[in-house]
Length: 282
Ligand code: PSZ
Image (cartoon, rainbow, N blue to C red; front, side, top):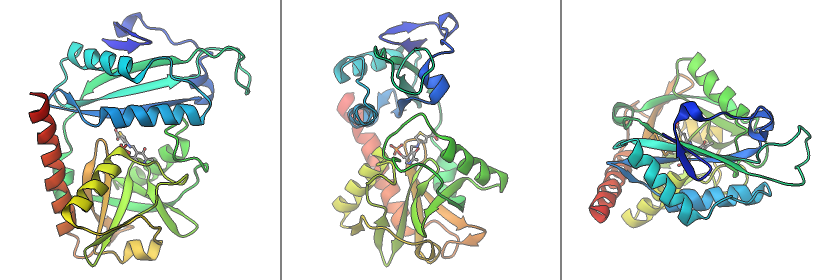
C-alpha cells in the first residue's frame, strides 16, 4: 500500500498525471525518514523541515503535520515495516505546463514505505569517496526534487568504484552528494555551517547534539579541500548511512585508512538514541 494525498491505496491503482509539475519541473519537495524496529526516527524534525522546504518554494503543505504523522504511521503498519524507510514527496500538482506557478495550486502528495537494512558493514569498515566540483544551485538548504547535481555527483563516484562524492565549492567542502560531511582534527569536529550551501541534515543535528553531550568540540565553520585531505578522520552522515567513516578520498587514505575514534564514539551514541526510541515507544 502507498499513501496518495490522505488515503492508503494499492500502488497499481495509482496513476500520475504527465502534467504534474513534479514530473515536468522537479517542482516539489521531499523527505526520507528511517524506521527502526517499526518506529520512525526523528519524524517531527523531518516534517518540520518538509514544511520549511515547502515554504521556501512558496508552496503550502496540503495537510497538517499532525495528520501527516498519523497517515505515515498507518503506512508503515500497513506495509509491516520493521527496518526500513518512508519516502514522501509533495509536488506543486497538475497544471498546464508553464514555468510560472498556476493560479490555483493543488499540491500532490505521494509516500511509500520500504524495507531496508541498516548499512552495518559500511558503518563498520568505512566507505571510499572522491571529491567533485559542487555544481548545484545556491539553495541546497531546500530539500527539493531537483537533484541533478547530486545525481551526477553520485554517478561519478560509482563510475570510479567509490561510495560517495564530496562536493567542493570554491575550495570549500560543502557536503556529500547525499550526506553531510565532517572532519576531525586533534579530537575536534568541523562541519560546514547550516546555510544555503548545504542541507541541514536531521542526522547532522543528532550528530552535533551527541558531540556536545559527549564533550567533543564542534566548529560549524567551513574547511578547505586541503584540510579535508589532511584530517585525522572524515565522517559522513545521513538518514540511511547514519554515521559512517570515510577511509579514503581520491585514492588517498584518510590517516591510516582505518575508521577513527570519534567516528566510533558517535556511532555508539547514535545506537543508544535508536535503542532509546524503542524504549520510549514500547
Ligand atoms: O536513501 C538515501 O540514500 C538517503 S535518505 C537521505 C539522504 C540519502 N540524504 C539526505 C541528505 C542530502 O541529500 C544532502 C544533499 N545532504 C545531506 C543529507 C543528509 O540529511 P539527513 O540526515 O536529513 O538524511
